[in-house]
Amino acid sequence: MKRNIKYILALLLVAAFSTSCDKGFDEVNTNKVDPTSLAPSLILNKAIVNTTYLDGFGTLGMLCYNFGIVQQIITPYGSSLSGANYNQLNNNNSAAVWNNFYRNVVKQIVAVNEQTKDDPMEVNTHNASRIWKAYTFMILTDTYGDIPYFEAGKGYIDEVVAPKYDSQEVIYKDILKELEEATASFDTQASPVTTDILYGGDISRWKKLGYSFMLRAAMRLTKVDPATAEEYVKKAVAGGVFESNDDNSIIRHTSIFNNYIANHLTAREKTNFYLAEPFVNYLKENNDPRLPVFAVRYVGAKGGPEQEASRASSAPEDQIGMPMGYNDVTIADTFAEKGVASLWDYTQANLSTVLQLSSPEFHITHSQVQLLLAEAAIRGWVDGDPEMYYTNGIRANLEQMAFYGEKARISEEAIQAYLASQAFDEAKGLEQINTQYWVSTFLDGNESFANFRRSGFPALEENPYPGSELKTESFIRRLNYPDGEIVVNSSNMNEAISRQGPNSLETRVWWDKQ
Image 1 (cartoon, rainbow, N blue to C red):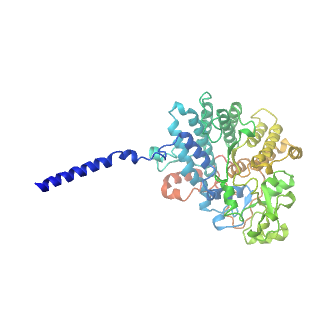
Image 2 (cartoon, rainbow, N blue to C red):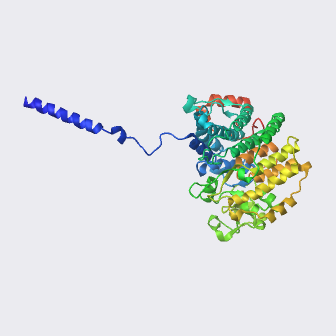
Image 3 (cartoon, rainbow, N blue to C red):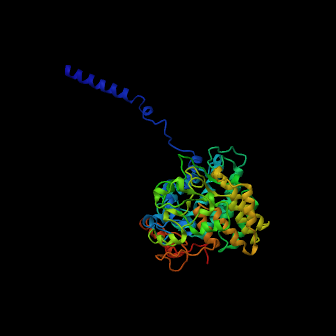
């Protein structure tokens, strides 16, 4: 009996102890600090930030392909840095845009789009996400051609793990539709979303952004569908595009949140990338006041350790761009002719102005809008004098240099002198406009590469590297689909290839009509 009583008491004590342990269990084990969900506006901010890459390595696609194709920045080195410098396929670097955008930006922007589409309280965040989605997919389709579009980013939402590829023609028509509808659907009476990283919830500026992207997208079709191009150019102008540099779409950086191109060129790749000779020569020959903003040369450097402040010069007369067509061995053949001590003595991008860790990056600018309007005016699609738009576009970019700090600011006197030297000749107007666009988009490799293919300007000579893999084209026309697609989405990728053409650097995208 005593044993039974002891047993019953023990059970009661255990039960009492268990009850006391469970008391407040849920409260104690609930994390009250970390969020369980995020406001759609914050996810939209994340997508916008990620558009300019998550780390320095993500920029290798731009550094090794885009900049090299348009002959602005080049490296003589191969292996992990090969690409446009040799006109060769580097699977890692050609996949950089695809991997960053689909794994991050697309997933985030589609999530915002879906979360806000039926919520009247989120109408402005929803339409902002539609605009940013259009911009995101412009970059992707301009780079690769036919891509997953309508089913992209639906892995978590609809369990679409192998999205079909849509034709670029269909994609562009939907991009234009989305920009038109989204920009017209903003509620200007709603309370501003002050957490908005671009414009602080200023809907009037978001509307200008939407119409400016519409202008860019429409002009992409000048070769392949001029009627649609004209239609949407007129809609963009009627809606209201950028009016000044205050409207520019900018990502601002700090010493903590870095400009990742600057981050890469300040550290790991500091001695590996140089301004290309065609770019430097164009700026020098035209006495362009942007040259000292863009360029620095460590005069007489015979090695990386000698690229030090005491040798640094941004004086225009000191700048010598690296010639195209050489590797790190054959480049030595150019030293005597070019008057440099070594490959490390060539001009580089300026790390104290345009490529400080805190330097901003631009998605689309007033300068680019004005230059696109200049071309549209030549084509008779908009009212106004092409020369006026052309001059305004150049001025806007010269004034834009001040965004890089006081050291980069160009004086009014220098601006006026340069404008006077760049007399507009409508007979050569398309070349003048799009060559200035090439300068205006410096460091935005996606846009520089796209507009070079669309317009055919500047009139660059092909890269003479003897090991080029190009057989039918003078320049790279697109980048290859990543190898990973062969593993995870081969049937859809192969269907796109059968429609578009071989998965090669020479295959032209739909709007890049010969």
